[in-house]
Image 1 (tube, rainbow over the protein chains, first blue to last red):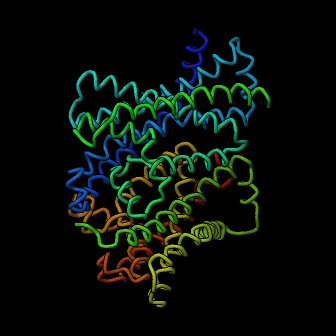
Image 2: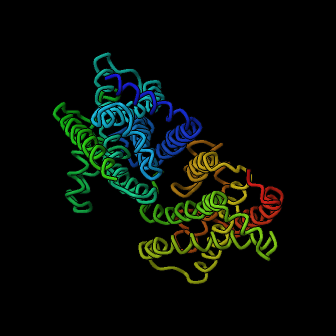
Image 3: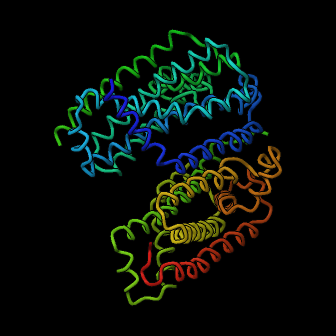
Length: 260
Length: 212
């Protein structure tokens, strides 16, 4: 356990080395909310307006999830760089087990994501209202599970790609697939309607429905805005995503970095 | 204030946004060259600084055009029939826009001299310059949302490029662009400023091979 704490400490120190980069990232996220979402408010059709009332309110929870994704994914970039510069030999020489090292890295990525996302979530609460205490803890728990799943996913990609370009390309593919097939930017009902009309492939509609990013965004919206409807059973997708990528990444990290 | 046929509107804006992002990349190349010592080699070549910056701006612009070419082709297919003369004018404007963005990227890169700070700065600039433009939404909507945003969007090179591209491809009815001459002049001013000011800054900042 002590070894994991050391890894967390080291990864948090690295995280704060990029503080200006984080400031830049937060300002980009806030530009999305305070410019793009405000302008889109004026463009909603009456049918969409009847569903979501205000795009600003709809998008604010989605933005917290977007920020969580971007920051939790940063650990992958660092691990990819360590692999290319062969820093991983040093990491492997540390007096800790491979499992502690791997779990420490996945946890650190997730916790860093939570830390980065907190001002965005706070912005959400300021503008949309506060959830009840139990809802608040459930939001934190679900976002934490999501964050470690994303961190695991990025580590799995980082150790499987040999160059920064390949890592960035893979990150782009994952980002666009997960975000555009989710309810982060638009209501799930719109995607489902497009699916019924045959304008959107059924497989992508299903992906949007089981996407953990949709689950997390819609859960926060339900708690803060009262819609869309939220089923607790949908949390299974977040649990499955988190379990698969946390353990999958830990395993991949242990096996692949030992090999090189 | 829903936009009729937002799909076509967005597709044309997407081409301009991608062109902007691709043209910015030349700045990252400058850092890579500095890191690998190629910078000193370039300075030792028998070309003037002006030729070097101009060549790099045009090279960066052309490169991004080649990169975005397939997307522009898809956009044209989606948008449909066009007036060839208007389209040529708008394509020329996009070329100037692309060279101007490359020049801007080079200018900022040699001024900042830190790849991390450059990365942050360009990220913030990208967030603001694209969102405060008509790439994703019409100017009237931006103005209705916030007059300050509308004011900034009116003088944004991304707005000029997006509006001209839409005008050239024949969907100006959506953009309500009254006079294409104004955005064209705006693009020319943007290109001239960053190309010629870029030469002066480049000259002052890198002479003697001092990158540090």
